[in-house]
Image 1 (cartoon, rainbow, N blue to C red):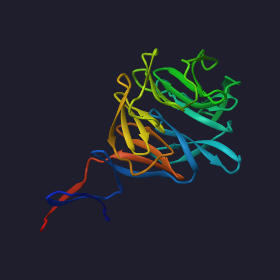
Image 2 (image 1 turned 135 degrees about the vertical axis):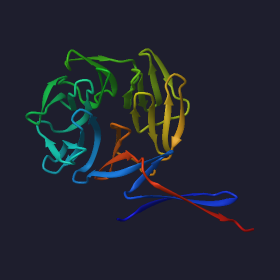
Image 3 (image 1 turned 90 degrees about the vertical axis):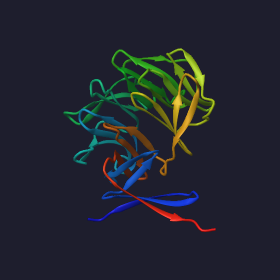
Image 4 (image 1 turned 135 degrees about the horizontal axis):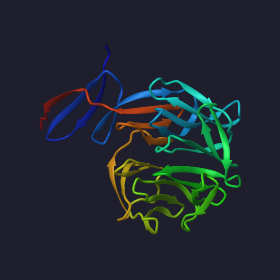
Length: 284
């Protein structure tokens, strides 16, 4: 058996070297340690991750040499078997309805729905919209139309789009489990509270990715991970990140999935490891 050690040096009057010894590579985010598991490095520039807890499949976009454009694929996080999805090209967005297990994709010619039996995506509507980003939360579907970079809520099984608010130049967004909408525009970071009140964040001017669990929403920035308070318009830095993801999302049981370069990584909370504390007295 081989060992992978992660070193954390704490400088004080008495120097202390803390060594974590595990049988796998590990990653530290805040106070938590994660096992690093490579799911795949066979796809070029994967991003737009969306996880389906019922099938344990992770859906993503990648650059396909055969299509000479973006393609769509899925990988099972247990077996690590990957499969390309047919029926859609030039796709830009993906989302999973956790209530039903339905998977949707967005492209420059509208909204697509995935048929797992045929392993094919079919265009179901919104043909005049260029779907840049897609989010489904609590049975509600939202998207950014790249034609005007405004936000829309989708009704009637993907056939009707209604504009949400008047914010423009939206480049990133997410919807949390309390139905608050987190947005990034060219003018800053905002939160739409209760579907009505628009609150600008006082601490952040840019967020590259939002990730939400049932309790909290976090923003990924260049200098780490921030917990966002929608109502107060504030953000608290909670962790450093020693990687900068192209895409990131939560999975089951505390898992985190992210992509970097051509790699799709699963971070799994680590519950078993050995800790050695080595003390050394400093001499003046």
